Image (tube, rainbow, N blue to C red; front, top):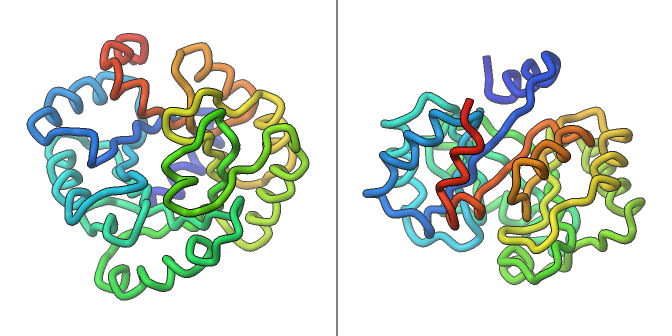
Length: 240
């Protein structure tokens, strides 16, 4: 079963999916063993690897190390073409549909094809929507795009629906790494009502209650990263 099929199957069974986002620029290889031990003991179902700015082959090296210590599927959440590695199980083929910079709507994707052609990665087309999380994010700076306003829920919903109708398999709603505010319950509810494809929500989620609320309002998968970078003790609240 493919990674995407497994996501669909889990959702049909009513399972809440939890992805741990690991940024190659923010983790030391010597700490991976201990970190992954905590991940494996938690409710995590997927590992996302990526960041807005990652140097050289750091992603490839990190994924190789992670694979030694977990059986969870590893999915690349790329900030750029250099983060593609055949060591992972799948790649979120992100199109930044909340922005209007052609490089991140299609340009980078074209650049990635020579590299993808040489891999066996499962490629999952994903509509990536950045909303205003209360501070400027690395995504905003790197892509030179503006996030959608959280006060215009209809625009967020219409953008997501357009992504679905373009054939995207997932919608990733992102408030940005280290966001002050996570996506509101109203936005998540409105998206869930409109979409017929899985909804991933991340950015600014720092408590177990926030995770619970995000699921209850319609998210199929929640992504957390910054909170674990800042305090690994949070894993204690995520135990199976």
